[in-house]
Length: 120
Image (cartoon, rainbow, N blue to C red; front, side, top):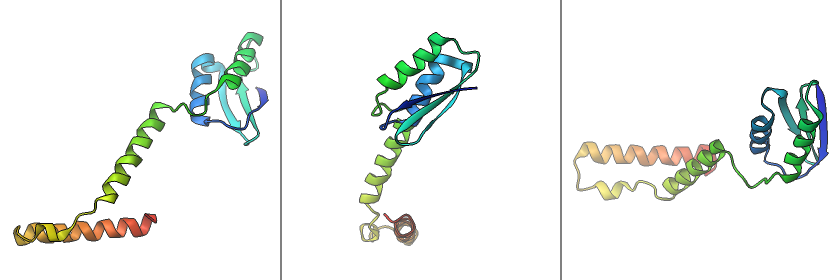
Protein backbone atom coordinates (compact mmCIF):
# COMPACT_ATOMS: atom_id res chain seq x y z
CA UNK A 1 0.00 0.00 0.00
CA UNK A 2 1.20 3.50 -0.86
CA UNK A 3 0.34 6.58 1.19
CA UNK A 4 0.03 9.87 -0.66
CA UNK A 5 -0.01 12.73 1.85
CA UNK A 6 -0.84 16.26 0.76
CA UNK A 7 -1.32 19.44 2.75
CA UNK A 8 -4.99 20.30 2.72
CA UNK A 9 -6.99 21.81 5.57
CA UNK A 10 -10.55 22.18 4.33
CA UNK A 11 -11.91 18.83 3.16
CA UNK A 12 -15.27 17.14 2.78
CA UNK A 13 -13.99 13.62 3.46
CA UNK A 14 -17.09 11.86 2.10
CA UNK A 15 -17.10 13.78 -1.17
CA UNK A 16 -13.32 13.50 -1.66
CA UNK A 17 -13.46 9.77 -0.96
CA UNK A 18 -16.21 9.42 -3.56
CA UNK A 19 -14.22 11.44 -6.13
CA UNK A 20 -11.09 9.33 -5.61
CA UNK A 21 -12.99 6.03 -5.73
CA UNK A 22 -14.63 7.12 -8.95
CA UNK A 23 -11.27 8.01 -10.51
CA UNK A 24 -9.17 5.08 -9.27
CA UNK A 25 -11.66 2.30 -8.66
CA UNK A 26 -10.24 -0.71 -6.81
CA UNK A 27 -6.76 0.87 -6.67
CA UNK A 28 -8.01 3.36 -4.08
CA UNK A 29 -8.32 1.99 -0.54
CA UNK A 30 -9.40 5.05 1.40
CA UNK A 31 -8.31 8.34 2.88
CA UNK A 32 -7.70 10.10 6.16
CA UNK A 33 -7.83 13.77 7.00
CA UNK A 34 -5.95 15.18 9.97
CA UNK A 35 -7.25 18.72 9.60
CA UNK A 36 -3.96 19.85 8.12
CA UNK A 37 -3.28 17.13 5.59
CA UNK A 38 -5.03 14.43 3.59
CA UNK A 39 -3.56 10.97 3.17
CA UNK A 40 -4.85 8.81 0.34
CA UNK A 41 -4.14 5.08 0.43
CA UNK A 42 -3.67 3.37 -2.92
CA UNK A 43 -2.57 -0.02 -4.15
CA UNK A 44 1.18 -0.42 -4.50
CA UNK A 45 0.66 -1.32 -8.16
CA UNK A 46 -0.97 2.05 -8.86
CA UNK A 47 0.57 3.75 -11.89
CA UNK A 48 2.39 7.05 -11.47
CA UNK A 49 -0.22 8.73 -13.66
CA UNK A 50 -2.94 7.61 -11.25
CA UNK A 51 -0.95 8.81 -8.25
CA UNK A 52 -0.63 12.18 -9.98
CA UNK A 53 -4.38 12.07 -10.58
CA UNK A 54 -4.87 11.66 -6.80
CA UNK A 55 -2.79 14.79 -6.23
CA UNK A 56 -4.81 16.70 -8.84
CA UNK A 57 -8.14 15.61 -7.39
CA UNK A 58 -7.12 16.56 -3.84
CA UNK A 59 -5.81 19.95 -5.02
CA UNK A 60 -8.99 20.68 -7.01
CA UNK A 61 -11.36 19.32 -4.33
CA UNK A 62 -14.29 21.60 -3.51
CA UNK A 63 -15.23 20.91 0.14
CA UNK A 64 -18.63 22.59 -0.32
CA UNK A 65 -19.69 19.92 -2.83
CA UNK A 66 -21.84 17.30 -1.14
CA UNK A 67 -22.44 13.67 -1.92
CA UNK A 68 -26.03 12.55 -2.59
CA UNK A 69 -26.10 11.02 0.91
CA UNK A 70 -24.94 14.31 2.44
CA UNK A 71 -27.59 16.19 0.46
CA UNK A 72 -30.26 13.79 1.68
CA UNK A 73 -29.09 14.20 5.29
CA UNK A 74 -29.12 18.00 4.97
CA UNK A 75 -32.65 17.89 3.52
CA UNK A 76 -33.76 15.61 6.35
CA UNK A 77 -32.29 17.98 8.95
CA UNK A 78 -34.07 20.94 7.35
CA UNK A 79 -37.36 19.06 7.42
CA UNK A 80 -36.74 18.06 11.03
CA UNK A 81 -36.02 21.64 12.07
CA UNK A 82 -39.09 22.94 10.23
CA UNK A 83 -41.22 20.24 11.86
CA UNK A 84 -39.92 21.03 15.33
CA UNK A 85 -40.52 24.75 14.84
CA UNK A 86 -44.25 24.09 14.37
CA UNK A 87 -45.22 21.89 17.32
CA UNK A 88 -48.63 20.33 17.68
CA UNK A 89 -50.93 22.55 19.73
CA UNK A 90 -53.53 20.40 21.49
CA UNK A 91 -55.84 23.42 21.84
CA UNK A 92 -56.40 23.32 18.06
CA UNK A 93 -58.11 19.96 18.54
CA UNK A 94 -60.58 20.91 21.29
CA UNK A 95 -63.52 20.69 18.89
CA UNK A 96 -62.55 17.17 17.83
CA UNK A 97 -63.55 14.03 19.62
CA UNK A 98 -61.86 12.81 22.80
CA UNK A 99 -59.65 10.35 20.93
CA UNK A 100 -58.24 12.98 18.55
CA UNK A 101 -57.68 15.42 21.42
CA UNK A 102 -55.90 12.74 23.48
CA UNK A 103 -53.72 11.84 20.48
CA UNK A 104 -52.83 15.51 19.96
CA UNK A 105 -51.86 15.80 23.63
CA UNK A 106 -49.67 12.70 23.38
CA UNK A 107 -48.01 13.94 20.19
CA UNK A 108 -47.32 17.29 21.86
CA UNK A 109 -45.84 15.47 24.85
CA UNK A 110 -43.66 13.31 22.57
CA UNK A 111 -42.43 16.40 20.73
CA UNK A 112 -41.45 17.93 24.05
CA UNK A 113 -39.58 14.78 25.04
CA UNK A 114 -37.74 14.68 21.72
CA UNK A 115 -36.71 18.32 22.14
CA UNK A 116 -35.54 17.63 25.69
CA UNK A 117 -33.55 14.54 24.69
CA UNK A 118 -31.95 16.10 21.61
CA UNK A 119 -31.29 19.49 23.13
CA UNK A 120 -33.54 21.05 20.49
